Amino acid sequence: MLAATRNQKSKGAPERPIVPDVVRQHVEQAAFFWAQRDTLLTDDPPDLHVVAGVDRRLEANLDGLRIAGPAAWPFVVAAHEDFPEKGELFLYAWMAIEQNDGLRVSEAVELGRQSEDNARGLVGALAWHEPGTIAAEVRDWIGAQDAFKRFLGVSACLEHGVDPKQMLARLVRDRDARVRAVSLRLAGKLRRADLAKELRAALEDGEEQPRFWAAWALAELGSGDLAIPELRKVAVAGGPDAMTALRAAVRAAPDKDGRAWMGGLLKSPETAPLAVRGAGMLGDRTLLHWLIHQMRNPALAAAAGSALLELFPEAREADLFTTEPSQVGQDFEDHFGDEVAKVPFADKVKAWGNAGGWLATS
Image 1 (tube, rainbow, N blue to C red):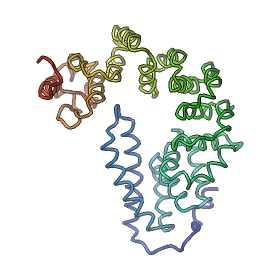
Image 2: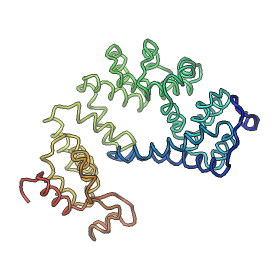
Image 3: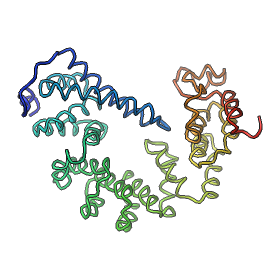
Image 4: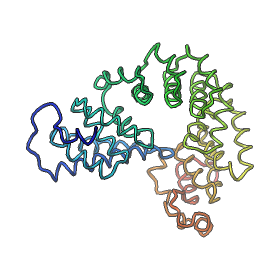
């Protein structure tokens, strides 16, 4: 279907005269900037100031494509054919929605179905557009027989914080695990206390993702006692949801219990970095001296640096980090080898902490 339709012109206004090289540049940069901002948001913790700067550059290039109109399509299609990654999928879907082109939207859905990353670019395009712009598609998708379309519909609701009301009670029990997972996450985000029974039942789900998001949602509802075992298991497993699980587990447990758990994690080399990172989620700035001590250990330095940035966002403005661990010392060079990692200079952090009055002693 895609090959047959790509040569058709998009619906809408007549094509405007364009400068091909300029439009091609807008396409390439828009795809790049969205992929960059998506990756930046996975940093631990993300630098939202940097993300905002990327967003401005992205929007400027999208404006260029708005001006080009349907004439930009050959460049958008070629970009995805040459490099079918998340940024190019974002642009394809964004353009289809922007042009209100149902045929192209259908193509974007099929391209998303073929992706291996849960259609991040397509979901990103749904998030970028205003809820009213995508409302018709979302209403159709969320009740569709096609599980992938249901996933897209619920994902759009999640991105915009839209409540599908009574439909959510059915979606959290959907036959498709991916739909269940995102629906459970939405129930937690919306704090749908009326679905607490369904969330508790989902803790016994046979699939890991629904179990995790059910636990996360219960923690959001204040039922951390039920959620903590699953959250801690996911955090220790170290997968892509580990930091989200760790944060929820720290928030769900009483302070004393949470610190005791992290103390246990510190005793094992495999889990000690998790405990150091979790310390930054406690909101206790008196831990700075202890974090500086952890920064001198190559195996814990990156986690301690992330904890520092969470506790002291202002530390981003100081020259305290390097992405070349060998600059810190021989022990770091031996530990990291050629790996690129963001690690702090413990002595610089100590001096910075003293200068800012964060440390009681030198």
